[in-house]
Image (cartoon, rainbow, N blue to C red):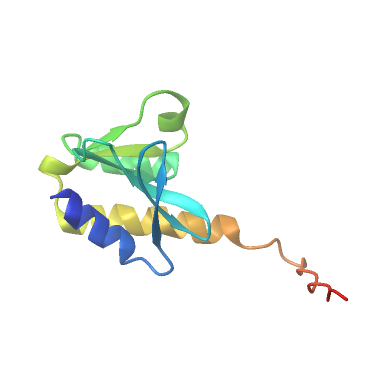
Length: 119
């Protein structure tokens, strides 16, 4: 997989936009990062749950590796692009994107207040 392929998959998610975070590309939906590309474009990152991360790492350890430190323990998973295939990265990316959708929804029973008109 190339960085261009990773970018195409990320931007194919509904509402996804590309930005920059700490001098490298990131992909966001609902204002939340769900994936990034490393500055050298050899690695991608998908933000999974720890349980999802465990499944991907177990199934394809040559492709998926937990990020270092607390980020990795929270589910951030590095993707070795050289060994990655589009279908599997697409599945991981979809789960990461879904995580941004779930965490951005308001709590049940809460409604946003209408904007006040300026006079």
